[in-house]
Image 1 (cartoon, rainbow, N blue to C red):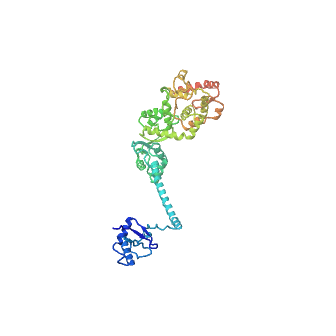
Image 2: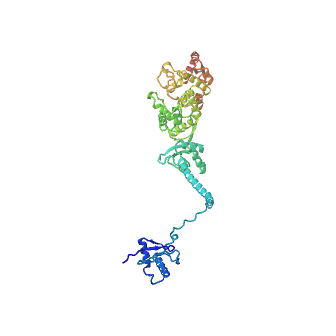
Image 3: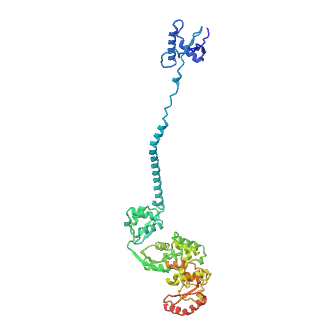
Length: 476
């Protein structure tokens, strides 16, 4: 049997071209039912074209002889005819029509203000949330939620809201006195807070603290206590007992000795550190001596020793200002040295002579001399005298300024503001003229006499010694 040859012919040029076997097979299958001998050429083309379209899944289209592809008849060969598919029908979908650049610009121009406002709103909202969280944690939250220990705090009568807020802040109950004051004012509770003794803890919220302050205890049991300038710790203890604050001063004196429980006060903590560095036999008698500021206080009866001591220490902190501390640095002195010198000045003379006495002591310290103060002797000697004999003046003590150069171990009393200022600002004329001595004149008047030289001083002592002894004997 003759071998079939598959070709397709370009209708324009009628030039036969070979087709791949698979493609030729499809064309061959399409022509088999027809014969050039039985039908005329035109009809055969039409039928073959229809059959090819049906087999190739083409959409029905009118026959176009210009685009038809067919195989030329050949002798002893099956001629297959096919139609070239239209390439345009197989193209992928066209991309969406691009918008004009100008149209995009005007669309963004309309949307941009709204977008900017939206972003700004988000930023402001986040900022407000973060700010509120920070403010709560920094000012309004409890100081320590885990510390539930109750502290007894005395709110003095006639205390202003500002003073009450400061008391709470100093005791570690609130974070900020100013914020607490504003909060109470905003809550319209300032008129409902009362003076008295309250128990509060660092774990309490501001609302809880306000509720406690509205119902204090011991509101009516108060008394005025006048603590004179120059009072010693022991004299203050006796005074507080006599005024009905305590039944005895044992616990108060024990606290005053080592400052236990008052270490949060910066002045006291500095003194404690200083004393711990000394040999035990050189330490001061009372850590609190010099720092319990003498004044008239309205106190609640049955107040704790710590409450009273804290109140007096707080008053000292108010009096000894930053200006005083700067002045002490200018003089090359510590706060404790200033207080110690002020306590000696307080005991040596009347207020009118404070700055002159201070000048003499400053000159003697500068000259590396002993202070030779009888007042320091009276502090540690069991018997208080105007005049001590030579044996008594030689008693070994860190407070003996007759045998030890410089300042004594610590303050010998609790000085007032005038004595503190005198220690910081001595009389300039006596400083300039280098006065090195003073002595008591008439003890009845408290007159103080000042001398430049040792000879002048010895002459004054010889003159007034009989008067001092007579006065001392009359006091026994």
